[in-house]
Length: 256
Image 1 (cartoon, one colour):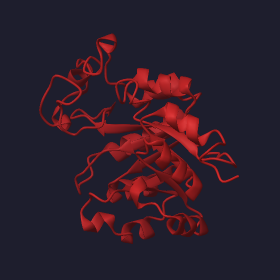
Image 2 (tube, rainbow, N blue to C red; image 1 turned 90 degrees about the vertical axis):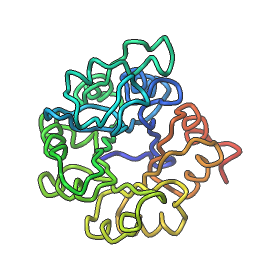
Image 3 (tube, rainbow, N blue to C red; image 1 turned 180 degrees about the horizontal axis):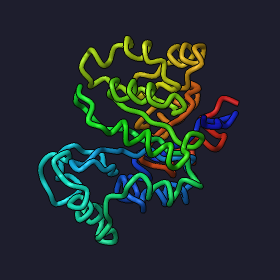
Image 4 (cartoon, helix red, strand yellow; image 1 turned 135 degrees about the vertical axis):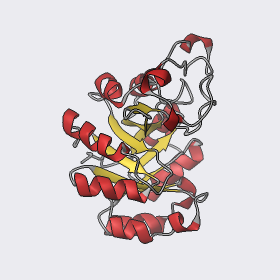
């Protein structure tokens, strides 16, 4: 389980320091560590040939010169794609990392929140691969798994109860995923609501149940300060420098 500072939330770079380097890449994760983050959130999917790869989008084309559903691509073909040049020429040649590479690069410096991407009601095997990753690399004390997909989280909890889980949702989801019924049944270690859904009452009720509150994607200084004042346990944002500046120091945003 994560160790939480007594006087502030944990600060996680969302897809790494993604405002400053190409998201979900080793440069973004390394930069987050250098900028003072406590951890990073990264997105993980399964390739057609059964490998794990770090990327957010299910449909290719936003951060690479490719098209089609990621689930139809092989690991080798995905690794051939440049996912850095879109952000800036200095990142030309950057490739999609594997979770193992992220752990090896920053796992000794940062906590990790693996966000498992699968928007299908059918399991695709990514949950089994993630359980294997945690066991092989002994990640239980320094990493967790979150997802919007309740079936993925249930399967992981059943297979490996030692893994810390976070249930993620936002106001854009279908009603049956926004409602709390599945989170009550799952009883995850942490709740991951979109930051606009967080209130003082919500945080108090979660803490009374023994659950942590981790919120995303918080980028504006006033919103970062408000989340800190509400008592959330982790703030995820693209601008690691803003997170560190606001949440690590006392000043105009603090009451005392």
